[in-house]
Image (cartoon, rainbow, N blue to C red; front, side):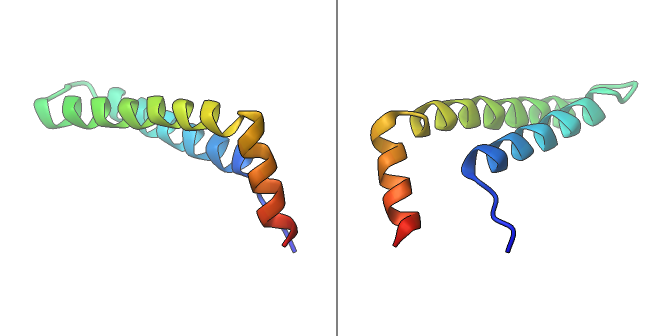
Length: 70
């Protein structure tokens, strides 16, 4: 059975967000809805960075390892 760690999942999500931002930014004309969408995606990317930092804290590593082992 294939298991994906939270680090891998966050990395995949970040990669998908960057691709989508690049795709929308690549349009010749950036209109207001596209601008709002890009800002929203960038905000989600920033939030994933924050989540990754929080989950990297040692006490959370212990909690996750404990839950996975059960």
